Image (cartoon, rainbow, N blue to C red; front, side):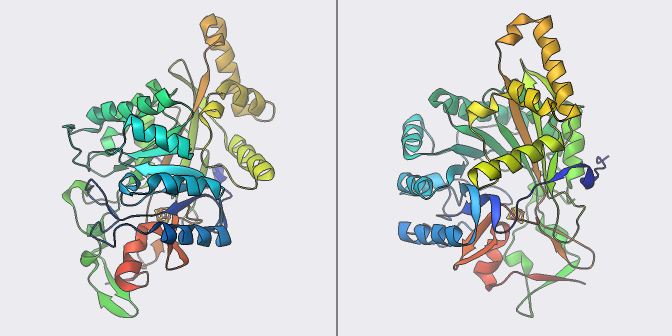
Length: 404
Ligand code: SF4
């Protein structure tokens, strides 16, 4: 049964349209994999020129602040000028985050990307992909592939490491294995993101219109058997995370544009010492981090340096001065240090979980999007939802849905 969550117990992230943690850049539609349920038409326009990419970045610079720039696609590592692009993003003031399936990444390219200024990677790895040389059929088996990339980054050092996995009705039961795996590797795995599969088959209750004209939604979004036939909600993923870690508790969220109580982005961070969860940070702690970061840097925080992530002891100590929940984490850490003095010298790591629920439909036809969408991109000089870019490409507008 899906967990019941009360959004008002959590901290509403202060991100908004003009001032956000994240922005989303797409230099290419080309990719070296084909994931089930991918939002993008990989036969689309292909690589943008570096001048076109710069023009997109100028649009962001004019319209929106953000901590980082997610460089996505397609797969950005097949973009021929990826090094120049990463350097440009850094020089223009954002943390460059490469969102990739990792297939094209090797130690040499990683070293070059580090020199160019890459801040972090988000690896998209899940069973919706047919990865070359990987015969994994379960998420559990894919943990080996995840570890390969986490270790590669750790060897170079100083690079944030996140993993994205799309989860569907058919794979949601595998979340516990990913949560347990992440706990074991909290020193090198900083964030796990579970993206709930958006199934076009579930739009059968609606007709879709572009500029007042009825259109065939199936021409824009393809159906896939991998996705199952049920829309997952954040509570489904929470229930599965709690199977692996019973004390899991979210701290912050973004609501929906149609429903204030839908949890479109749900963020939790745990502090892990010697492979054991000491507790989950409180909503107050999240608020302090966002507020102080914005005060001192001018942007809200989305990606932290690995060095800061290893300061779970300090975070619980400082947070504990003003918040009971953080104090209890600090007390647990002290307990572990008394029972095993080696823990005095071991860092405690902050590790985050994000659950993302893309568009879903209300019975009256309203489409519930992420209010204050972080993954907003540029289309034709304007900011648009990246998850629905294909609608702009195909029809020049976002589709409206009307109940049948
Ligand atoms: S609205 Fe779409 S693009 Fe924006 S964060 Fe949500 S899923 Fe991502």
